Image (cartoon, rainbow, N blue to C red; front, side, top):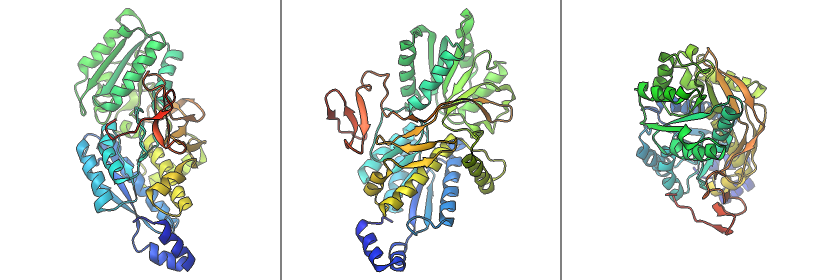
Length: 426
C-alpha cells in the first residue's frame, strides 16, 4: 500500500476516523529479503527474525500512520540472481512499501537494478565495500572507513603487525575491500610482498593449506595478522582450523568483519579467545537502550539467542523509516526518502545515529575481543564516524562524493563539478 499525499490530505480533512477507514483498508507492507536457506542462512535468518520482532513491537504501539504493518517474507536462498527475482516479486506482486534485506554485496547488487527500475526503497544492514551510492538504498551498515580502515589502524598501531594476510570469500565485498586495504597498507609503508591475499568460494571448508600459508608468512619473525572478510558458514571451518593448528591470538591475531555473536554461537570459542572483530555494535555494549533491546530479543526469539551488529542496523533503519513515514505523512518512496535526511535515532551503544545525505549513517567504530562465552570484550570505541560512500584511498574514488539531498547525485566529481549519472551496473 502506498499512501499518497492527496488521499492523505483528503482523509485528514474528513477526520481521523475517515482517514483510518480510507487509508487502512490494507496494511502497510514491509518486504523482508533475507536468505533463510543456503550458505548465508547462518547469518540472515536472524535478521528476518529481527524484522518480525520490530514489526510486532511497532504494531503494538499503533503501527505507522495509524495502520498496522504486515511483513512479507521471502527466501532468496543464498542464490544471488534470486535476490533480483524476489525483489521484483515484493515490489510488483506483494506491492510492499519498503524492503529490508540482503547481506552479501553480490545479493544487494543483484537487487539494485530492480530497485532502481521500479523506484523501490531498500535498507541494507551489513558492512560493505563502499564504492556505491544509489538513491534507492539506505546503507545502514559500515562503510570501509567505519570498519576496515580502523581495524587495520588497530593492527598497525596497537599490535605492531608487520605482515598482513587478507583472507576473503570470493565476491565483490572482499575483493573491493581488500583492494582498498592493499593500497592503504602500502601508503602506510607495508611492502607489497608482505601482503598475502587469498579468496575462497562460499561454503569453503578445507582451510589447512591456507592456514599453513599464513603461518609461513611469519617464518622471518615478523608479526603476522589476518584481516578476514570470510563470509557465512565458511567461518566455522576457518576458526576450527586455527584451533587445530594451535594458533592463538598472540601468535597470529585475526580481525573479522563478518563474524559476530551469531556466527560464534555455533563454535567452541575457548581456543579463539583474543581474536578480534570490528563492528559498530556488540551485544556486550553497556547502555539502557541495549539492555532493553536484548531483553526484547530474548523474549521474542528465545533466551539462548544473541544479538549482533546487523541487527542493530535494522533496528536503527526500521525506526528511522517509521519516523520518516510519520514525518512525510505517506509511505510514498520519494517523500520518505526526502524525510530520511537528517533523521536521528539513538543507537544501542549510547550515541546517536544520523542519516547523512549520502544515504549512510554516522556510526561509532568498535573493536572487540572474543571471550570464552562467545561474546566480545569491547577494547576500543570511537565517537560517531560519518560513513563515506567513496573511499579516499583509491585515486578514482577520492575525487567523488555523494549528496542526494542538495546535489541529487550519488557520484559527484568534486574536481570537474559534474555529476556522473549512475546506472545499476556501476
